[in-house]
Length: 300
Ligand SMILES: [Zn+2]
Ligand SMILES: [Zn+2]
Image (tube, rainbow, N blue to C red; front, top):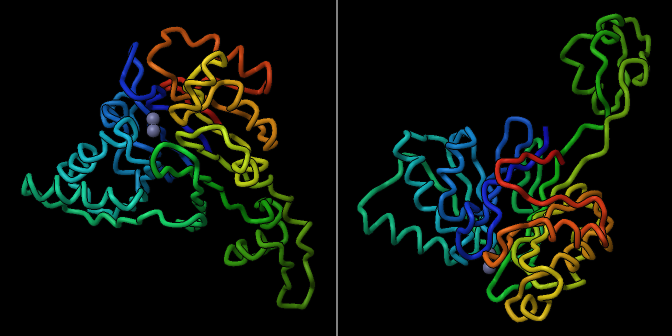
């Protein structure tokens, strides 16, 4: 499974029961937390997402609505006896902030936090099943977007067929890579007899807090699922520009111009109680849009 679960979709302050930004991306057995606004660990418990499964945390920028829940979460992970290493990717200043809080409360964690400061665009994590890339967006302070890409082997194995041809399990990975199998007698079992082509690799792009800027389009081209903030409705475009945020129409325009398959919009301003107009406005430009709603899991 490759999916994103929304834990918080509001901007700046919690409002109308909506929490500030946080999302969990699930790629099979892996979980990646993106941003950690206040209340994130409560949301994780509420939606039964196990903290110990999260080994990567990405923080887009150091506005409080994106990280004020982090020290609480890191501390709880320690109190719950976590021993597995945790990888934290964030603007450099976060390392000092965390250290100061831990030092002041005289606590040390029973697990290692590997802090990776975001310095330049590119791959920041390269695991067996996925990779994570960061890219710069434009906001009032240093701010980063992330692209999570699943990795797939080129072929899917038809196990029944492989057994039929008496191919030992030790060769299954080689078959998935597209190689033929040669029997002891020298007979070649062609790869296509025991495999089928795999589905294309999918990507999830998280565009953080950003003003509308078209240079982004190249960075996120052809994303399977694109999350773009839409803090305001279209009539407040001036306000969006003033605060380095985007509107519904701007988010949908980025989705359209970057050829995204599907758009998810969030980071709604606390001035709006009802969100229906966000969807209507965005859909006028890019039909395959959904609102990022807390507790909902969106398949990539
Ligand atoms: Zn924000
Ligand atoms: Zn911000």
